[in-house]
Image (tube, rainbow, N blue to C red; front, top):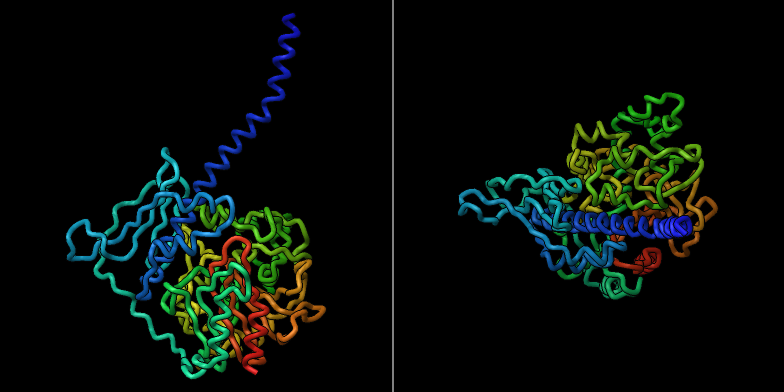
Length: 476
């Protein structure tokens, strides 16, 4: 009888163990997701408020909750808005001690009773960084001498008021915002530039020329532009292997030493990632570093043979010009071609997060598009190498499967090697694209740049091809 009872108990343990293990894993995942959601909220609040204030604008917490903190990826969407938070500001010199009347210093978001809040802190050059999960709180914010916006040069744009008031442009502006190009889409800014002149400009309530938004993956096209600047300076060639120090230790045994800058720009390093278009949540919201998350993936295909869209490939391309960007500063490079209202964020150890974490205005993104329209020349000075526009917009090499659009080097194209599937859009058109509906469309043959900013949540999508087609048709 004892043997029978013992056998029954053993069987019960065998059956129940996976259930218990699954329950423990669910609890762990739930705790991790709360930490990520808190990091997401801290970063969005800190970055949205601090970047707009640096440009003389402002974003309310209510607006950020309505736009940036709705319709985000599951399971964070169900968590993020209910988390308690605290916005801590600098005290302006001469104010009553303890006054918080200066720029944003830090945002703290509670997520667990037994752990410190997740913190996002503004940096000296703009934008914020999130600390690692569990990092201790930093000291009280220091006193600052002033709270006024930075002295930023004029953006230099000429605005054609007559064109903006035309029925055609007003109709396009209205259509960009009323769901015509995507049910449930939320346009925050739409900009049309022709012949270096703004001919249409529309903003949602609470947004405007002084309000930056996160570029998401449009940052990948900015990273490609940084590579082009470094190529023009003679600091790197796209055929160079990236060969990071920690890979070199493996010598010829580490196939990653064969990865070139071109492979990284074209999403063709052959490296494994956890999912297509991997979200990189540990880096973006968890407080890990670029070196921890972007360079360690193993190679599963020969470099240059397979396309796999990956944040980590863009981060790898940026690391190839890390020395150049560290010396001049990303803000210094951007200012060379008139992008004075763009903030490139770094993680807490200093690694630039040039796959997603850039905040920029619609007009600054228009300036980037205009640089490419002008063949990489700004005010008579060559910024990008001759032929760079053709290089980034050429969909050669491996391409995304099952897509009607192609991929060049850090920029998407409306054509694939086998042809153009988009009627009404010229073959030479190419574009930058980012999550939640961020777009820069460059059409060299028409001398047109189109910028669309959005906060499209959930399954909403803005049809940028249809909008581009209709803009070009209206300009005929």
